[in-house]
Length: 85
Length: 344
Length: 100
Image (cartoon, one colour):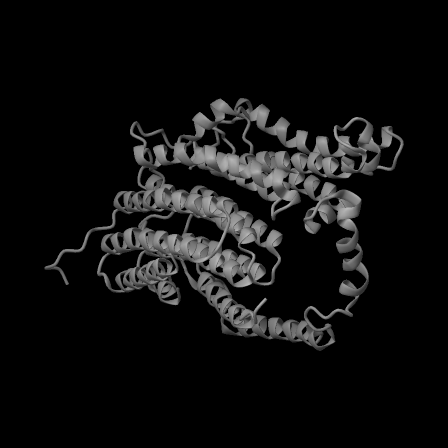
């Protein structure tokens, strides 16, 4: 997971970071289940993993919608700003 | 239970948390920083899960890593996503660094005075916790100690927390809501609606149509099963709110407002707090103290000592309702800049 | 049953390693997302099925983990599609072999 974080740091465009965070989120679900297995009480951690899986999806969709709308609204907030910088 | 590699897990997660926080603070583009903050929140959730505090971990995952990030993205949608350059030169930054270091050292100097982690003779573990752990099943038949402490033993706190969520929703509503009737001509008009909505995607719509009923069913399960598994009113309410936010962002904001009109949303936010307070008042009418559920047993079904368990369930439903509609109301306010017509 | 679990988990980890290397080394945003979307979903599904096979658990718990697998299987590729669409609309240009 640390390697994916490197991409989140380096990513030349913002959407790179978005992809990296999506991957980290999905892998963290697996990490939660491993923690549950280690503790021996898997039942507790499965609920949290399920909840977070749903919310990870929402964050990705929300962030993508932000970029989908940017190029269709005329007033740009600062002129000459690269939208994907 | 075998020897658990807890401290390796914790140290790895702590390093990751610091790394994520540093990365999030150093990214110049605010959208990237917002998304990395969401991941940082989830690392905190993992730390709490590692400590065994699953209810807190669930809440942190639901609120911090989910809904809070969507709120920041909605706000950035209406403002700009680039940071202006920071004022102040090198001397200013050195001064700030010195102040922060002194404050941090001051706080850390109290560290040796803490009792050892999990020691059985610290005041928390010796006097307070055993009472709750020993008495919760005898008093209220609820195995989840966190739920019974939150909703029964410390019920006033939870009532006021729910009121705080309600006040936050009202505050955002009253600051941002733009009344069209009083709109003056000086206000800059919103950009004209493009004829082709670029965010409209059949795949996202269908997937959301599939996921939303399951999310709501799971959230209702979390609320109702909060007596026995991590969960409870707050977490279930947040997931319910998140399902409505998913409807708002994958379909149009207006179609959500057609289903849940603004008046309905605001009334239901208040209804949850009202339910909680009304349960307390009903206890008073039955002859007990405020929020003492034992006296409700004549109007609740079931045997006499299940009254506290059912009282906790009613109160959790109230909390869930308030939190659910607060989340969606705050999202609509933030995303449409108070205009309630079109948004993220 | 245990061997199946071990095989599935190690294959899942192998796919995840491939995903990470792809995420780091591909030249363009679109190709990176290709690697991330497919490899991430597949590796997670395999690791979770391996967990079901490996750890003794009741039927309810296995059903819950199957539910997680279901949501990740449907949700993660959709999120990848949405991000790809967003990148396209925001104007990121694809990499061509002859440039730079």
